[in-house]
Length: 250
Ligand SMILES: O=C(O)[C@@H](CO)OP(=O)(O)O
Image 1 (cartoon, rainbow, N blue to C red):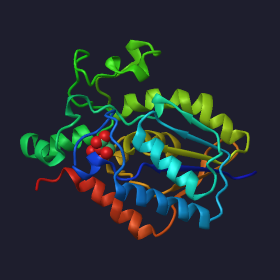
Image 2: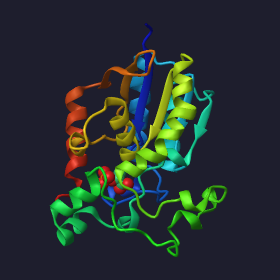
Image 3: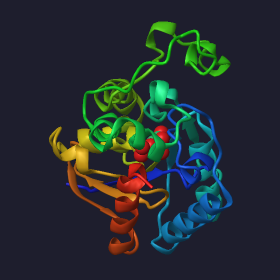
Image 4: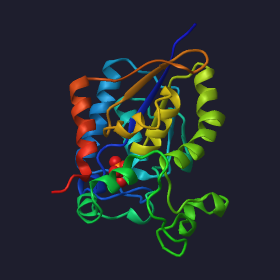
């Protein structure tokens, strides 16, 4: 049996992470701090000798730019990159743009936790007439409009991530390639749930911090043998807790 390496990486701090707003498919960039986080992730991967053969990302610039910084830091900017909308963040529906703490003050902690972390309850839907709906965005114009969401739960996010996993990412890993996937808090939680098989209840407590590489070692059948954050485990734990607490009332 050989062990295959898959590194999952959430983008560095974005402008709306900084402003504590629900983001979803809104295409905000990383901040200077986010760029520094990406540099740090790249350095860590370089120190540990990672050599990627292929990289995957979403069609949102916070993930794309984070990945470019990481590959540049590794001096592996030549690595082929594939972008897909299927790796986008979970669509946050009508919550996109709202302040997380204000939303909690208005709707209560329990409701906001359900919207943020439950497995199958989607946030309120954004109508297709909203200029922010993906049917009105040129980058998705070649896709079937029926596939474009106005909101998503983690469960429906997983349904659209999985075909890309099976058709593109998994075959590369099976072919022995070392793969980097740079994506988003919830599209990565969907993949995390699929890979680890954690329950719908357990996934509620899983939070993915920005720009800390999460290494999965997989067997020949792509079953995880182990998974862990690279670098200081305590720092990763603290960063994940900070994500969980973002919706706390001020
Ligand atoms: O706003 C978002 O799109 C996500 C990730 O930043 O937020 P949350 O952690 O609340 O799911």
